[in-house]
Length: 240
Ligand code: APR
Image 1 (tube, rainbow, N blue to C red):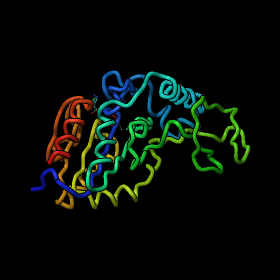
Image 2: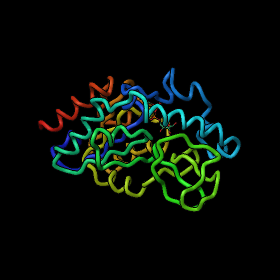
Image 3: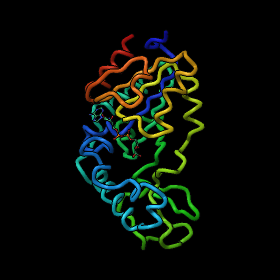
Image 4: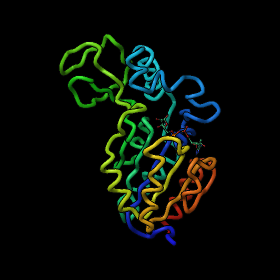
């Protein structure tokens, strides 16, 4: 039976729970974002077609709190950056989060599979570019100069997550898969543990405040706040 490895590559999947102690709300907890707004209104292509101003307002508020607020990486983000620096093999962090706390903590090998709040893109022409202020219907694409064609660089329900090929390659190869702070409700991320287990060779660990939907699929689960669990887990891995 696979155990914690001493070498080989590691894939870490993170969700909203890792940023909770930095002051950012999760989605499905009692006081979460989806208890205040309907995801159909603000996180689907249909919602954007129906009322783009509402969608812009939703992401503008989140962008503002991330860019201007008192939001910083916490010890869990920092521990993952340390793991990437000190582990003898590859460490890939795949995050469902659109905040920039992993990169601010120092993670470099990072995939934002659900996009990035601090980027936008033109629906007509351009690849994503950095954007820290508010975005509105009156804004013009700097490349093609169309007005009203800009949208958040965020993957909505019904859209394809980003970089999936690279993610599945890493999952196929890894010696350890760790899932942190995600409720396991949203696919394809919720299915990564099954992809890894199907090969049978890798160890799988869930670190979460409470058992996720797929908790029974992991070989090992540890429950508690990410800011405590993740540094302790990284310390254990690096001291083996
Ligand atoms: N430490 C660890 N885990 C925590 C903490 C904490 N301090 N606080 C909350 N959690 C856990 C919760 O128990 C829950 O299992 O984090 C998880 C958050 O789950 P969700 O709110 O569903 O967030 P996530 O899994 O990232 O959502 C996936 O859904 O709406 C979409 O696109 C959005 O990327 C998001 C996706």
